[in-house]
Image (cartoon, rainbow, N blue to C red):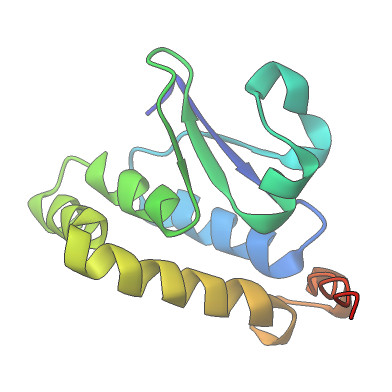
Amino acid sequence: MRPALLVFDGDCGFCTTSVDRLRALLPRFPEARPWQRVDLDELGLSLDDVTTFAWLIDRESGRRWHGAQTFAALLSGQRGALPRMIGGALAAPGLRVVAARGYDWVSAHRHRLPGGTPACALPEPPASAS
């Protein structure tokens, strides 16, 4: 996992706490950096990309995962059979949709979750012109 880079929202207390907890739990953990401290252009990411999802980028192969699939890839990269099974299940076609919906829910409510602060709230989508 070392050539990989985990990009997350460093202004979000919930996101930072989650990364710290995952780093402590998962023996194989990539370099993790807040999007505020990386060159987005160099990584091929936009501001919308990084404010919407966490990203895992394999800098050797160029593969990238976002949102729930970031978590699935982190688990799949572990040595133990159980985390790899869970990661594989989260990436499977049937559960992939459920995992994405779960990630979207957590993302939308991260300011209310443990470690979250009002600064963690995502901006409201612009009102559609009618």
